[in-house]
Length: 101
Image 1 (cartoon, helix red, strand yellow):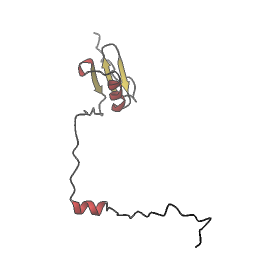
Image 2 (cartoon, one colour):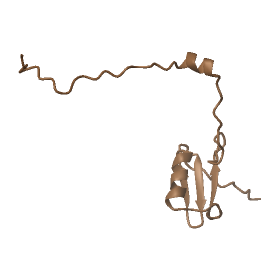
Image 3 (tube, rainbow, N blue to C red):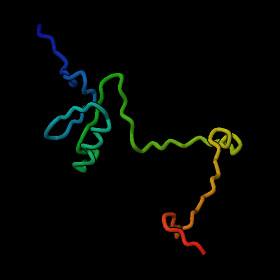
C-alpha cells in the first residue's frame, strides 16, 4: 500500500518564511524581506498567503507597542539633561592685522 508523503513547504533551511501567490511561491530569510515584497507589488491580503517554519513568528504590523512611562525623577537620574551655554565670538576680529589706536 503506497504511503502519502507530505510536501516539503520549506525546502531550504535558511529561508524560513514563505509567501504563496497565485502564480508563484517565494521564500525569504526574514519577515522584513517578505513585507518589502508585499509592499513593492502592492499586494492585498486576498492575493497571498504568508507562512513560516516552526520556531519562527510572523508579527503583524498593526500591533503598536506602547512606551513605558517613567517618572520624571527617574528619567532625570537615567538620562540627565545637560544645559550648555553657547559661546559666540566676535565676527570681525582681525588677528593678523590688528588696528591700534
